Length: 203
Image (cartoon, rainbow, N blue to C red; front, side, top):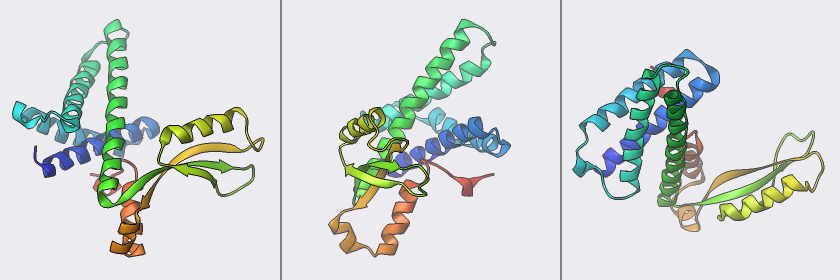
């Protein structure tokens, strides 16, 4: 696949997954309609793909994982309820979805770095009654921040406070020289929106 084709595929899969998750969370019909549309677009690409189109890298692994997910999903809905096979397929679909969602986030972070941003993980604290969270520490090492989060949850520095992690895209010094604050703000807004929250593309 060309770079443009890869980016389009990532976009469609991301849109498909976001609308699927939104439907199962809200049960709103619009998300069902959207997910069916994007599933159809993804299926068209998978059906037309040739072996030469699947590269031996993360993009290729992602493509194959999506193809397997779509097959498993169709098998799941075609399998009678209450059977062991349906239970097995349900578990399989969940595992495949988790893998694909993780890769979508990975691609998004790669895109951010290509645009000139570092990916920073922040440990946040919200004390009882506060309207805003306060940043306690930040690092590009996700595991490092996770350790501190676990410590705060196990032994809260402030009893009753809530602790969580969030990801932040921070422009590098070079990026700040190249772009205006407004351009950076707009670009970050695009990066931090839901993986593929395509409200503008609702049918």
